Image (cartoon, helix red, strand yellow):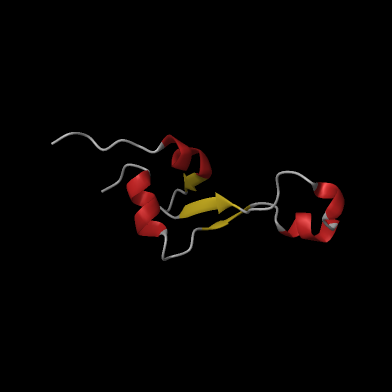
Amino acid sequence: MPKMKTSRTAAKRFKKTGSGKLRREQAMRQHLFEKKPSTRTRRLKGTVDVHSGDIKKIKRLLGER
């Protein structure tokens, strides 16, 4: 059986923690900051856990069975 390939786009977007959880960056934090309040951009800083409904799909994209 052939090896599973890792989706390179998913590998750039999701990181696995030491305990095995999946983390992601939040959206709306890349550009056009002039029209967004600073409170909003500060709130969107950092990473958050991936939603439980998406974990199975993302693990498959990252090359896990």
